[in-house]
Length: 537
Image 1 (cartoon, rainbow, N blue to C red):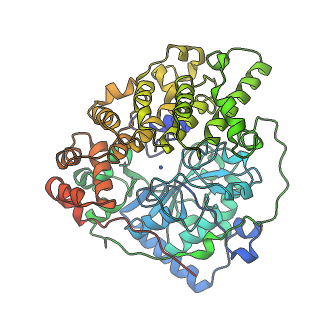
Image 2: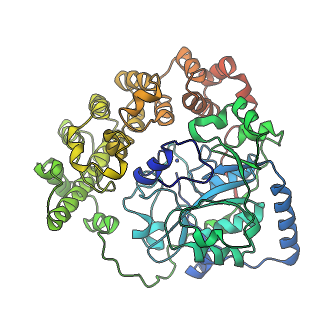
Image 3: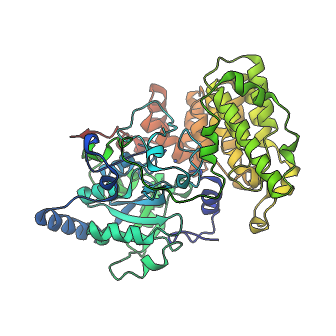
């Protein structure tokens, strides 16, 4: 099993993120280096020229940062802006970090973009994988945001745009290359940007040649504090800083910056030119594709149409639990699963009615099996999202039933490669949708179940799905909680619960949340609250 170079604790987090689309964060910045009127694909692939004086100043600032200790933020400050977005990277620096971990993927027409997940749908309101979309198609996607807000940059950023931001802020970089074949392009851009000294860490997989480059001067991590929200525990941060190495990696930089006595908030506006709308960029030649393209097939079904979607949504699908068959049978099954997912997505704008709720619940209960995790349960995932969007509180018992279910049919799609993990984890991608959805269904059933979940220990949670304490806590905080319940979360023995609750109460304050913080975690009120990233011309 491949693990990041800064991880040595045997945690399952890397496997979950690699195979299930990641529990962990929303991503969405399309970028260029020219204004929209002059945008073309050259401008999103290259960095601009830099004066000698600016280059000298930048390298001097990088040297000062590398003297340490350094705070590296995992995928940017995702409590403040969607993960892997330009706003999140800029916010990390605003709140006291020295650099960011970034994830590389490539669009179908060859543009390097920054996006963690194998699949789009956790973070974007779309389906498929980055390498199934052209950059122009990716530009049309929209984020799945936890709160209503407007981003300056509408889709995942390009690496060229990130390098412009990194040069502006003397940002250090930890490179995580998510797929093979990207090293040469990454190295070329680092050379043209004269930014090799910004790189302080590179994950080992997919980077064999890059790691041999003599220009790399890698540093060591003292600790990785983003698992289990240890970055929100002042004692854990204080204990990590004196250790061997030069850096710590966190999900949120505020506690670490406070420990290092750094200014709490020093905003620098994000250049608007990095957020240019490139939908009018010219198309590039596309490589041939022989694999099933989930994104293309989904969108080929057409725009949402109730009269076409309802018959698919209500139809029986006896093959849902029968994945065995020849390649032609499996291809037909895959297309049918995607059609069912499309139908659930297509009825999302509809008015809630009992028959519609019943059909969506039935599709959740009979989510499809598939040996390929990308399609497994996709029809159930889309049904769950639509029910949550309809605020179908009457469906909360069905969500709870499906989360608690340990389906014996999962043996049909068991993968020997992952035999050391609980079989129920094959349902991880489906179940990771259910707890956030319960947060939107504000009712006693949802609240009570979420309270029961965060009270579980790690071993019990693992029997149901990969542990999701952070997600459950965010969902619980969408419910109506008493002052006593808020304080209990803020004092919780599980640091993942406690740290998430502290951040949510700090960044999304109400009168009751602020009172609870004063009583249970008064130190957190000394931290700066999240603010929206500003842009400038």
